[in-house]
Image 1 (cartoon, rainbow, N blue to C red):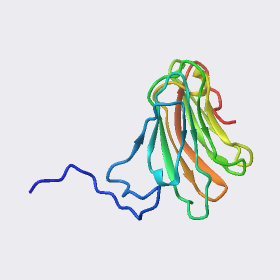
Image 2 (cartoon, rainbow, N blue to C red):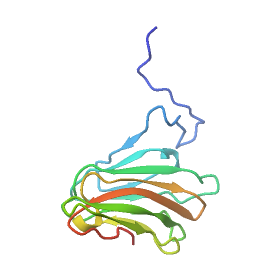
Image 3 (cartoon, rainbow, N blue to C red):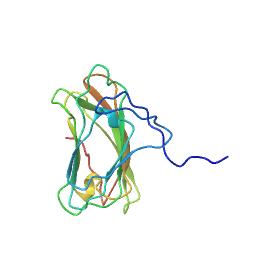
Length: 163
């Protein structure tokens, strides 16, 4: 028996379609510096791989969108600007937290997002986690809230990435 190499997709005919997740995770590695994520891309791994900086804008969380998630992976250390994730609305906030590990000092710190005020994750310096190796997940847990978990890599003394 030959195992097919083409992936199968399910599609309801909508613009953003649907895909069986877990079989193969979509990887988003944009050529440009700004990418607006779509609800239909839930479950994707989003790459921060442009040393000049990148921005991802999360979708606004609709009533049927609770449970969508996006993984983020820093594969290239930034050299200017920043790696940023913005919520899709000023009424969507980020809760949860990230562990930040210092690659030179050999220690780590944990930072909590203010669930009533945080609307962005900004890795805008070596201390804030723009070094290659960071990996975290954002999940929509209500129509107004994302939760984050994972880690960032920084030097020498790590700082909060939440703004």
